[in-house]
Amino acid sequence: MQQLKITDQIKSLDISKIEKNLFSYKYSSKNIKPLLKSENLDISMENMATYNSFKGEVYENIIYELLLDYANENDLIKKFVLKGPHQNRVDKFYKTGLMIDRSLQIVYKSNYKDISEFDALFFTDDALYFVEMSTSKKTVSLNKRLDKKYALLKLLFPNIHIRALIVLTEGTVGLRRFPNFCTIWITKDIENDDLLKRIAYNKDKAALSTKYDNKKFIEAYTIEHEKFVYFQTLDWILKKSRTKNPYFINFNFFKSKRMSLYFDIYTKLYIGFMNPEEFLYIVPSYSDEIENIFVTIEKINTKEFDIVFYVKNSNGKLKRVRVTTKETSIRDKELDGFTNAEVRFMKYLIEDKYFLQKSQIAALKENLQKNFSK
Image (cartoon, rainbow, N blue to C red; front, side):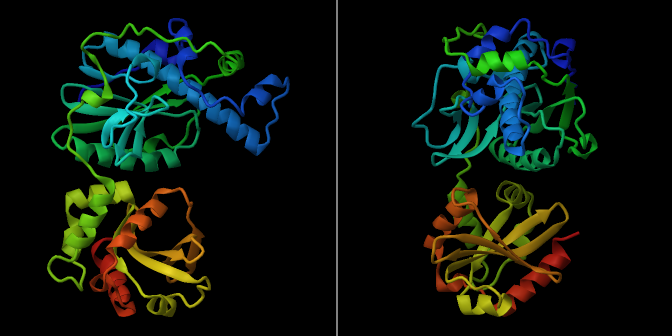
């Protein structure tokens, strides 16, 4: 494995050569302006979240600009994907694949839906690296995102190594918890409020004529990769899991390496449906009027899988329901989240042969404990 070594320029967050370029990026600066205008930063939880979000945007663009120079001068990097003001194509009508979205970020879309975003992408001789940059001192949520992005890229590029470059700031905790495919860089924190103010209030978003125009620097849409279609894959998984017998789940199907990648992308895989009467026998405390019940195998964490129900109520709300020996957990799901989009798709696959009985649920949970959970 080739080692990517951080430079002093990146470590110290030296923007002397790239500061001008930072003003050519798009920023979500509307809510930050009143905060930066004040002499005393109001550090309420809401305001601090707004401030940190904007600071994170600026930090990401600083690191990306520094990485462009790093890639230009580093022979280990063979191809580097352009984004932001450095590329010249926004793929508004590109249905599925790696592309640049309207915010000028590198994304993978499936049927026009954003599946994952990458702060940067580049190729070495033996690997594809995706880059994650963060100013947060906690890394739990970042670690969760890594699994999904790694799995997605492994499906798209099955014949090369997938690795990650993680760029964090001084004082970040949890560094030992990162997977072994990660290289960690630590930089100085961004503490330049004057720079943040000038970027937030900048009205001159002049077009940038990029200097990175040699063959090493490429557009996202030109990258050849395998195709991954998000919703059709859920359809395939449901049907494939019933191939041997449509009325029973084939657990061996879920044990392949490919399926482990799907678990990391989706978190949960749909295996059937339930009638409300059967469901209420398992969860008698559920009081909302039910429209549909979707049964999934969900990856709770790296060591545990469980049967989790997603219940679509007649009022349109979606609930996640998990029953354990300790408690019955019922939580709301976001209306604009991935799960709501998934169940809208899955309802068109409802057939009698895919319905599960309460006795089957008990057997499935037992099977999961024996064969999947560690």
